[in-house]
Length: 242
Ligand SMILES: [Zn+2]
Image (cartoon, rainbow, N blue to C red):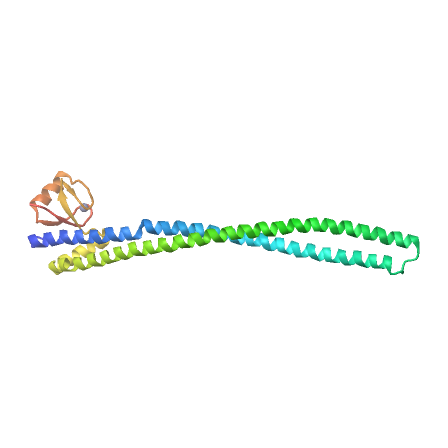
């Protein structure tokens, strides 16, 4: 690499700085706080949906109970009325039959009254479930507004970063064009291998890419060698300043 010129070395470091900037912006876009706000709101909405499902199931069960109790009340009412009619249509002549019919009317009426108490209870359960459902629907409507605003803020922040990333990628191209081909390929290869970092600089007796401090023997070889070397530790390109 003894043929690397001062401009090659400068271009390599500028290219690394440009790539670092692209990565920094991509990292910011991937970890947007606005996205976390959206996710938190979506989690809350999912909980509300689950609560809505739960309350709807309870309301449906209470409605089924209500229909069943209403059906039983209808049957008891019919039975009581039939028995009453028998008392007054002259079909019963024996006192014993009349007393039995009267007892049946009273017993049916008592059961009917018990069922009406039960009906009130299930109707209250239906009403309570409907009130709860209305509250949940209102909560979800408020949350939907927050979500719309949060998504708009997230999209705006992501859009701005996407534009800045595109600009940083575009700014990288002329720097890359300044590098002669073999160096360009070596940088790209080292960067692909080195989590985006293709070149380090020897500074304070260490490689700035892998941060390993060199032993004296390596240091002497690097300092007396060409201005562009390979880091003996991380194998990235290594610029040796004057
Ligand atoms: Zn290194």
